[in-house]
Structures are given as structure tokens and as C-alpha cells.
Image (cartoon, rainbow, N blue to C red; front, side, top):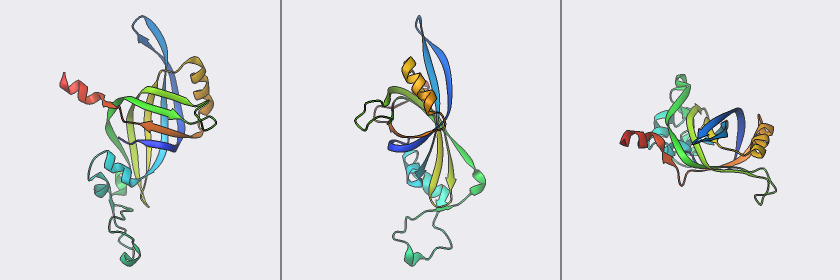
Amino acid sequence: MIALEKHPVKILHLNVRTEQHGDVERTAVDIKLGFDVPNTYLESLGPGLRESLYEIDPGADPSLLDDADHLTHVRFPQLGKQKWAGEWDAVGLHLHLGNGRGKGDLLFVESTLGKFIFIAKEGGTCSCEARAQVLPTPDETAKLVGLLKRQVPATIDMSNAVNSDEDEDDE
């Protein structure tokens, strides 16, 4: 899955709802994130995915390319949006809003990330969307609402992430 570090992310949509945790009802928010990444990030989803979607531009002068791995031409633009199955629990989502030292930031260490969609774009960029599910405090919920349709630097930490779909297969 794609991990990001202080990468520009746009808050595209929020869905505020409640979840039952035992006898306690908690506010939950689904955050739809939008971001662009280089097509090299596709390799973190699956080895060979980038090569299956991109090729060297047939009109490019090979003498001007600095490496043979310069895959920027979309092979099959007709594919459009691609859905990537899977959902990951224990994902860290850090929205960098504060003074650069963490004060004022929003940090959700137990997020769930899923509903990942990407579009291969000409030039070697992938436009991505993903849904993060978080359990914010009332103050954090208010901050999230203020971020709607805004772009903010974000870190998505997958170091402790667990693919929840694999857990279901094991049972």
C-alpha cells in the first residue's frame, strides 16, 4: 500500500457517523483523500503493476532519456479508474496543520485505509483516492470539517498496517 510523508493531500469528502464500541457510541469520520503520486508508487501495490500500465513513450528520443526505466506513456488509457481491493487497519494518518513541531496537527494512529482507486495519467503520474476511517474527538471532528476541499500535507504510515482482508481469509 502507498505510504506518504508530508505529501499534499486534498480532503475531498467527509462522512460523519457513529459507531458502537461495546456500550459506547463513538463519532466516526470517513475521510475521502485525493492525491497525486509518481507511477513508481504502483510497485508498492504489486511488483510489475507499473510496467503493465506504462511504457516508454514511443515518440521519445532514447538518447535524451537518462534511464531505460523511464515509463511515462500510458499503455491502455481506456482502462480509466482502477480499484485496488483491500483494507488496512492500524494505519497512521497524520495531517500536518500546525506550526511544524506537531502542535495543532491531527494524528490518528488507528485509522483504517481502504477503497483505494487510481488513474494512470500520461507523463508518469497517478491520481489516487482512498478512504480513511478515523475515530476523532469532537474538537478533531470540527477541525476536519474546516479542512473539507482543502489541500494539506499528510503522512500515511503503513509500518504497523494489517491487511484486514487477509485476516478474514484466515478464519
